[in-house]
Length: 394
Length: 142
Image (cartoon, rainbow over all chains, first blue to last red; front, side, top):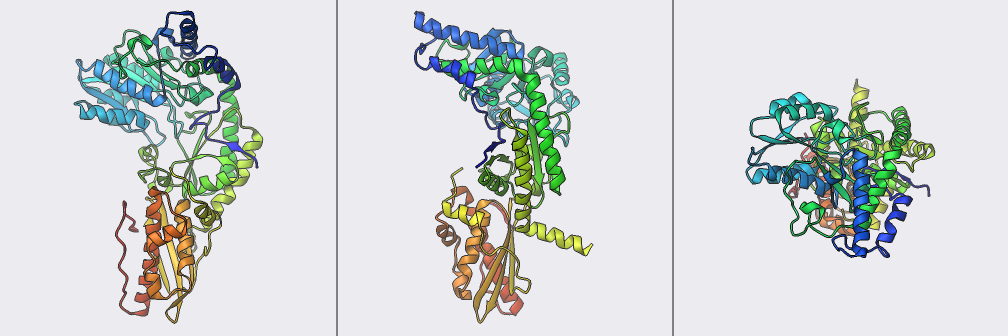
C-alpha cells in the first residue's frame, strides 16, 4: 500500500546524513565529554562542534546555546529558569493563549509559586497584537513568551515587533521556535529575542536533542542541578550522539531552508487547492499568508477528526487531528478555541504537515482519498442529515 | 492513547445498520457536537420485539463502533431485553474499549434508551426508561 506521511509537525525522520554523523558516537566515540582523557575530549569536541552548528543556524554565539532533551524541556527551562532568576525585579509574566502546553503549564506552575501571568488573546488567524503586549506590561513584568510559529495552525507571530516593545520596556523575551526552526529563517538577532527554544526532531534531527538559546548576560536558573555540564546550566551527561545529530541537522537546514520553503509550500498549496475544490463546508485555519510553509490545518463541518484520521490511516496516510476525542481531556484544541473556531467544527479538524519526503504524487493521492472519506462520514452523520433537511426547507 | 481492538476497528470500518428508518417507532438523539459525538438511533417495533435498528453517528472510531454494536445487539430483542443492554455489554461485545473511550459506550446505551423512551411516548404508554448516569462529561443536546 502507498504510504504518505503528512505529520511532520509530530516528528520528522532522521536525515541519512544525520544518522551517519551520529553512529560513531554510540560505539567507537562513546566517551563522556566531562572527562579530560582523549576519549572524553573526542566526545567534548563533537558536542562543541554541534553547538557551533546549532548556533550558526539561528545566528547566535555558540556559548549562548544550551542543549536539552526536548522542546518541552527547553520551554520549561526558559519559563521557570528566566522567571526564577529574575524574580527580584518583579513577578509578572506574559504569554499568549496560543502557546504550546510546555509553555502554558510551566506558567501555571509559576502562578502557584507567587507569579502572576497574563494570557493575551490572538485574533481569528492566531496573531498576537504587539499592542496587547505593550498594554499588558507593568512595572512587575519580567518575562514575555510568545511562540514564533504555532505548531497546530502554523501562524507566524510578529516577533520582531513584540521584541521592540519588550526591549523598550526592559523585559526579557522568550520565543518557542520549535515549530519554525529548520523550516524558515530564524535569526535571534533579527528577531530580537533573549531566549529561543528549538528541537532537533522537528527538522530531520533525532529525538532527544533540543536546545535553548539564552542571550549572553541573561540570567537563568538551572532546572536540573548537580553537574557542570552546559556551563553549569543543565546537569546530566550529555546525550552525545543525539547532540551530534542535532548539530548535523542544523548544518543541513542552514544550507537548505530556501529550498525547503519553496518545496513544501508548493505542495501545501497544491493540497489546499485540491481539497477546497473537492470538499464543501471546509474551513482553513490560521493565517492565509503568515503561515509555516509546511502547514495545512483544516476543519470539516459535520464530521469528526479521529474518524477521518483512522480512515486515512487505512489508506496509508498519516495525519493528526485536533479533535476532542483524540485528547485525554475530551476538549478540542486550545489553539482552535483561542482563534474562535466553533467548537462543533473544531472537532472535525485535520492537521497536515508536509515534509521534504513528500511528492506531488503523494499530495494527489491524499486529494483523491480524503474527499470520499469525508463524504462517507457525512452520510453517516446526524448533523449532516439535519443540515441537508434544513437546506431543503429553505 | 490505547489502541482500538480489532473488533472495534472492524465495526468502525464496516459499520452495521447505518442509515435512517423513515417510519421508525422510536428515535433517540444523544450527545453534543462540542463534545465530539452525536448518536441518533432508530428502532422499529412489532409485537414488543425490535425488528430493526439503524443509526447515524457523528463521532470518533469508538462512537461509530459502539453505535454499530448496539444496533446489532438490540435487533430481535424484546423491549424488556433491550432495556437491560448496558454500556458495559456494548463495550464487552467489542472486545473492550480504551479507558478514555468508555463514554462512547455510555452514549450508545443512552441513544438506545432514548429511542425506547420515544417509542413509549409515541405509543402513549408510561416509559420504563431510566437514563444512565453521566460519566465524565455532558451529553445533552442544545
